[in-house]
Image 1 (cartoon, rainbow, N blue to C red):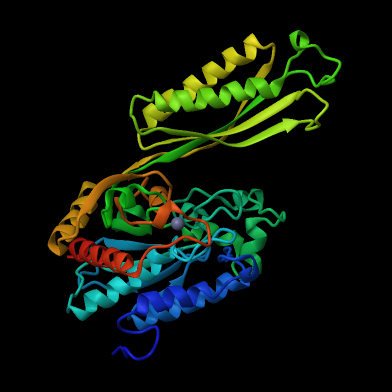
Image 2: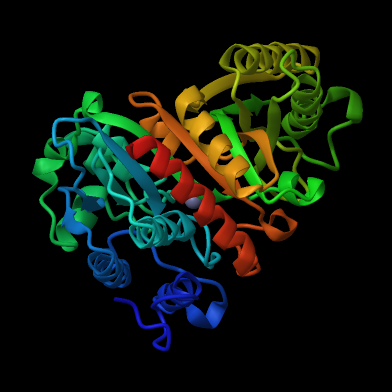
Length: 417
Ligand SMILES: [Zn+2]
C-alpha cells in the first residue's frame, strides 16, 4: 500500500508530513510558522491533512465551524466511539509540532494499527480542531463550539487583532455562522478522547523520560487588577504626597508570586504577564496601573484560594497607599481530571512498549480540556527541547515523536477494543 521511496509515505512519513505542513506558512520571512485558523493558508492545510486522512483509509468530513473529522468505522456501529486529535492552526511565528503532532501522529497511529491487522470494535475518529490558538482572543473555538459553549452571538463578539469577527472569518472561509449550533456533538456517544501533544515545558526533559501520561489538565483563572492613584508631576510632587499606582501594582506582582508559592496544592502557578502604566510619561507619577494575572492549577479549590488571597492582599496594598482597586474578570476555565480508563490504557501501552513514563499534570490547556467537561479524556506528552513552544525553535526529536505515536496507537487499540 505504502511506498517507502516516496516522501510522505511509509517509514519517515510522519516526519516528512510535519515538514510538508510547515511549508504552509503566511510569514516565512519572519521565521517560524504562521497559519491562523480560517485563512486561505489554513484552508490549504486542511486540504492536505484531509488527503493524508484519506490515504489512511479514513472517511473525511468538515463540520459547520471547520473541525476536520476522519473516521475509521468500527465493527460495532452501536458502540460509543473514540476520538483522538489536536489542531493544525498555529499562533504567530510558531513551531512545527504544537498541535500538528496530535493530528498527524493520530493518522500515523491509524496506519500502524492497520499494519498490525487491528480491526476496531468502536469507531475511531481522528480530529483536527479549528482554532485552538487564540486568533479571536479565546483559544479552542472549534472544540468550544462542539460542546455548545459558543452561540451565534458569541461569533460576533469574538474579534481578532484586525477587528475581524469570528463570524466574518467563518463566512470568508465558506462556512455559515448561523449553523454554529449544528456543530454540537452528543457527548454520550463518545467513549473517550485522547490527545497526543508536545509537553511545552521541561519536566520530561529534566527527568530524562520520553512519555508523559497526563492525569489532570490545569485551567486558568485570568483577571485584571487595576490600581488607581493620582497622575501628578514627577518633579513637583514630594514622595510623601504621592499616590503612585504603579508602585502599588509592583507590590501586588510580588503578592501574586507569594500567594502561588504558598498554595495548598503545591501545583498552583501565578503569573503577571502584562503590566500597563498610565499615562506612561517619564515625568508623570503613574495614575493608573493595570496587571493581567493568570493563575492556574488542576485543583480548582486551591486555585481559587490563591486568587482570593491575591485580591485580598491587593486590597490591603491599595488601602495602605491611598489607591483604589478594581478587579475585572477575564476568563475562568474549569480544570479537568483525566479519565482513569484512558490513563490506564496509556500506562499499559507504555509498559508493553517498555517506555519509561511519568504521570503528570498538563499546565497548558488544550482542546482535551474543553472536551473533558463532557467526555472522558486523556493526554500523552512527548518532550519539548528546552520547553520552548510557540516559537521557531520548538523541537522534538524524530525518535521522540515516534515513541509518542507508538503510545497513542497502543492507547487507541485498548480504547477501541
Ligand atoms: Zn497545541
